[in-house]
Image (cartoon, rainbow, N blue to C red; front, side):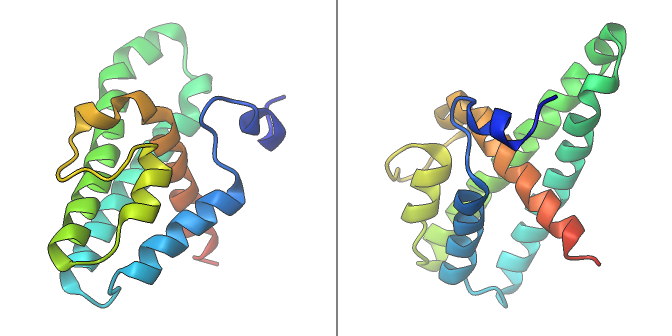
Amino acid sequence: MNNLDWYLQQSESLTLAEMDALQQQIFNQADSTDPEFQEVWQDLLSSAIKYTSIRAGWHLLSRSERSAQDQVRTATHNDVITNFLILERLFKLKGWHSQAWTEKLFLQADQPQRHLADVNGHRKRIGDFANYLAFISALSQR
């Protein structure tokens, strides 16, 4: 059975504490009352929840079902990554500090303008953090 210990042994995994710290860094540096931030965060969270739903059920699909859904899963994962890149651009536009969370999430030094191709090698890590955000969102709805 795969569990958290198994996950933590995987390449580029993030501990729960690291994911919590990433989320805190985002909210500590942003103005969470800013309408643009709220819109971008809503888009990010929405794509994270959609991606998590697909990813969580992936192992339940047959090979043919996975093949049929693969493009949708990849496109949804790309949406998640694009939304993180949009969030980073918003931080730069607003003058908010993004270096700490982007370096931790993307495993790269700060860049003037990062693109999907720049972070493609870290897709799993970014997807993992999106899954964490969806998990926390679900727990917060109690």
